[in-house]
Every structure is written in structure tokens, then in C-alpha cells.
Image 1 (cartoon, rainbow, N blue to C red):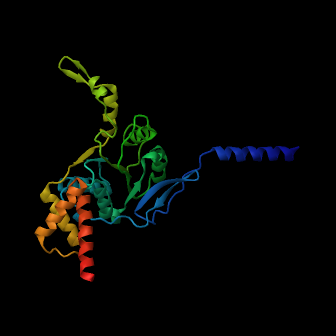
Image 2: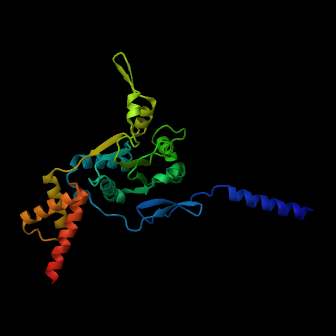
Image 3: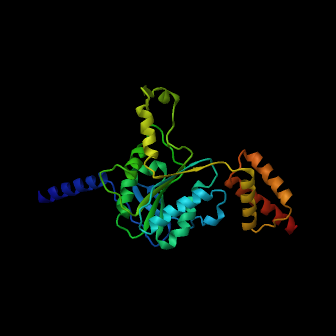
Length: 289
């Protein structure tokens, strides 16, 4: 009879273990400077990025003011001083993500680490915070190309991490997020129409207030815009030089760079970099013939 009870108890324990969520696997913190949060077969873990993008702050042109602000904020953070979460918004290809990667490379030797979390995994943020709590490193929680639908679960998780959770966040964590939307959520005309006017005061609709409340939890907003023609050409020239190309005829190269931008419908840092790769590659091919 005792053996029967033991067998039943073991079976019950096995079933309970299956229902309990497994604890996230701690990474090797010496393996990398950047990590990605992953879920695989019911297990959550931080996967080291073996070959992170090594872009330099000096390579980013046309965003001097944004670069100065985020570099200063990150320097304060790694030095153990107060610093803010940062929201980078604006035109595509203008250097938002590159700036985050560049400050990581700038300060990795001083203990800065980056954890990239995709939008669908933001509900795991409390587990990530618990994992890094009390670590000596300084962590940037990085969310790229962020935007939310009205009912997505990750919205509330991010909002709580930024400000408002009953649990205290570790002082070794900041959130850096990029987005094409300042308020991170879609806005509709009907919501603005619901705004009330009381005397001289304007009272936005609750739906509008809710959408603004998330972006307001970022202490620093950095806005990015499409480049003027002169800035675009300067960036293209910089990348041609960095990629080892021959500067050659400025007029011909600039004419080709502007035609390249027309075919892409934008003058951005990304388009300038893509042009430079094409230009230098074609130069090298001609020389090898």
C-alpha cells in the first residue's frame, strides 16, 4: 500500500512540474556584449550575439545633436549616475538603431551590455529584470521598431518596467526603444474628436491619454528626420571612403548617389550606405577586369 501511495505521489509531482513554468536559463555573462531574449521548447533564455554590429559613433553623420544626447546619457549610466530611458523616433533609415549599437560599442569595455527583446516577448520583461538584478554590468534593454496594437500584452509589461510597477527596477537597467511612431500606438480621428473643451481648457479623450502615457515614461525623446541633400551626399562620401573606395570624380559620384536616392524614394543614412556599397563594389569589379 505504501508503495502504491509513493507511485501516486511521484506521478502527481511529475504532473505539477509540467504545469510550472521553467525558470529562465542564466547566460554566460562573459560570452558577449549583446544578447537576444529567446523562447525555445518552453524554455526562456538569453542567447549571446557572437558577432555584434561594430558601428562607431564617428561613422554616424547628420545626427550630431541626437548623438550628443544619447552618448551623454549612456556615459552617465555606465558611470553609475542617474540617466533616462530613451525613445528614438522618426524617419526610417536615419540612424536610430545604429546609434544604440554605436553607444554599446563605445561603452562595452566599461561594462555596458545590451539585451534585445522582440515585441512578442515583452511580457517576459519581469523575468529579464529578475535575472540581471544586482549584476555589476550596466544593461540596455533594447526594443527595435516598436509599435503596439490596442490590445497587445507587451504594452502593459513595458509600461510597468518604465515606471509604475510595484516592484523596484534594478538601477543597472535602462530601456532604449526605436519606433516610427512618437506615441507607439495607432491614433484615430475618432479619438481626437472625443476631446472635450471645458471653458479655455482642453481635456483629451481617455484613449488618447492612454496612448501618450507610454511614450511619456521615456525621459528622453530623440527625433530623426530625412536628410537634406548636402547631408546625404556627405554620408555617402564617408561610406565610400570607409569601404576603401576611390573618391574619384565627385560630380559623377554625387550624381549617381542622387539617382540612387530617387530610386529608393528617400535620402537617408541607410540609402547612402547602400549606395556606397554598390559604388565601391562596381569600382572594384572594373579594376579587376
